[in-house]
Length: 382
Image (tube, rainbow, N blue to C red; front, side, top):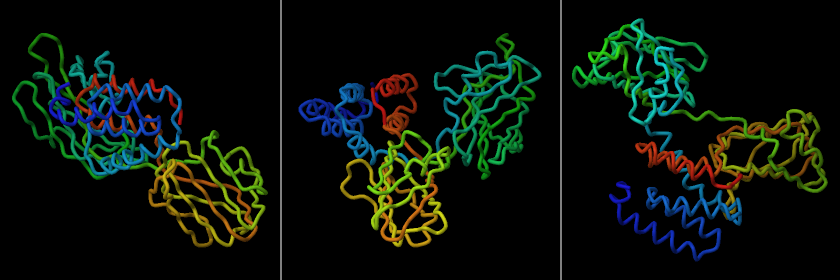
């Protein structure tokens, strides 16, 4: 494709890496191919070789996590500061006047959403996360732009607030296909609603009063930490002599965990790479160890992150450190735990690969769809 041709040196290097990877073992081959997608993400052959490698089933999951960690961290750093279209390809809930064209409000195909009701209509779009809206852009179709409209934003408390209207817009372009630009706001927003009140009938006898080529909400999405220790498939190991480990993360198992030695430990395999905000430990009647530290590791990395904790060992800030395994080391005392909780954001291998695809194929809807399908078809479970 054109983008690959614009960086011919990167493409050539990725091809050399792809071909040379065939002579490496599975772990090294995965590392080479993953790096090749960085050198030239538009080399489709590299993505297909990744798919075939994963299909072989010889890869250790720890290797996959270690190799993908740098990509995840760089993507997250970019996402935390980069302004992007928060509604791109999100499903809109729209009035009947749009018929079967409402899907075109936010897609990347170049098709147009058309409302033929002179009394107007509306549409709503939910955002993935609470977000700060910086700008809104509405590219109208031909002359059928809204002469009067209102834009509402829903805050995290679940209530809509009218924030913008046609009075706040700056228009660019001419009479045909103009674009309305509106400034954003500081309120954390989870949903956008647009009421189209008064339109302009088109001059092409199609009976269209409101035509929208693209609706963009530019902004920055916030992290929303989720409960991490909720997956019943998480694998838990504890030291010999302790008991009741399944009750630590289960909402239905009330069994207490009891340490049985002077040196006790609990290790939880998260099965994904998680960016952890905090861990909470609910002890029974003050039955805590004398010393405690939390060890965070990703895959087979040699140097884990060690967090030394001071009493009373209830809530520990992990400062968004990454981990696919969490180990709690305890010394002394007779610890009895009722529950463990952790908050953070978790990413599977396919999630991380798709984040990279979204970054580089943002403007290429059909190619992005093709590469996403390659990733979806990868026979891999975290």
